[in-house]
Image (cartoon, rainbow, N blue to C red):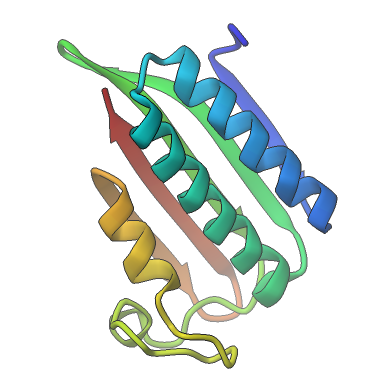
Length: 133
């Protein structure tokens, strides 16, 4: 996989699986170690599941990134769903609006090296994460 960027529309479980597989391949191609590849795939799984669960559809964008001597992978997950009412609460462990354990977004933040979240109620959410080699 030598594409600098890959976009995957997320609306079904099949799309979710495709995004996980593509993230693994791209992370491997970026030279990440096996444990880092697994962390990226886990983060993509959580982000894509959130798109399906809360917004019904959105997109996962995978791209190679560099910053000076650093190389890695960037994942952008975005949707035009309901947005997150209280980002601070959503980033707290065990907070859930969907009847889950509430470890999703805080877990993604812990898995990745960089984490950015933008959300506006009624307009959607955009989460950008990076893992460096």
